[in-house]
Image (cartoon, rainbow, N blue to C red; front, side, top):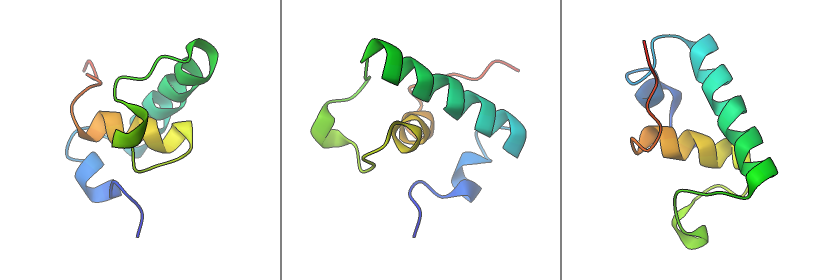
Length: 65
């Protein structure tokens, strides 16, 4: 099972395209700046793209409409 689920994420973001864009931009920030909003052991995912989705699901990333 993929965590977090896409159904839960789509309640936060209006479309899949915005979800992909936000996750990609945040993961690039993580790679370039090494800035994470949670401690290393609080993430379920190993890769930055999954970690960015986790941050979105926990409300640490705000998407402007």
